[in-house]
Length: 167
Image (cartoon, rainbow, N blue to C red; front, side, top):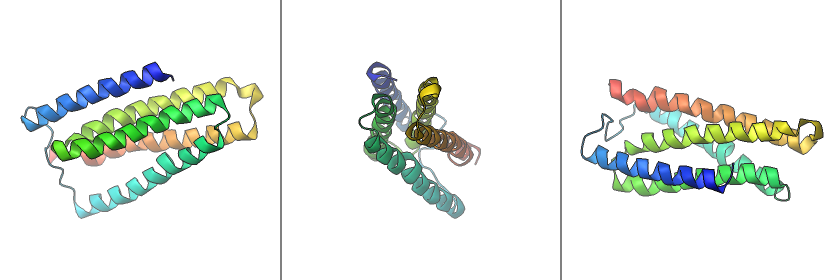
């Protein structure tokens, strides 16, 4: 994880998302332009978003602040938070410009990258296994929790979001 990889992803994802938005508006992509969720799905999404705020933003934010003096932890959590914040900004801006179905593309791209980021972060933390402190164990546990959550998010995106195609 470094600036080059992170910025390359952000630029590439942004270009793909803009292309996807343009193709959605032109009705070229077979993605619904408007997402129509049932009440049950809307309720699940609200709960899921609340969990995402806690597990995906608040806990890593607190951990980032707690580990500011530790370069490896700061790097792992800093790049993770940067990508998450860029995703949130991208969704907010582009969902007002393009059809709401674009959120599926944005969420899928960023979540897949986030899972890769977290996996890489775990590998970096595990490399220092012999020097692991209680703080490292706590951070490793948080990375596992986040990895499981965002992996599950890919499943939720498929089960609720992308399943709109079959309706």
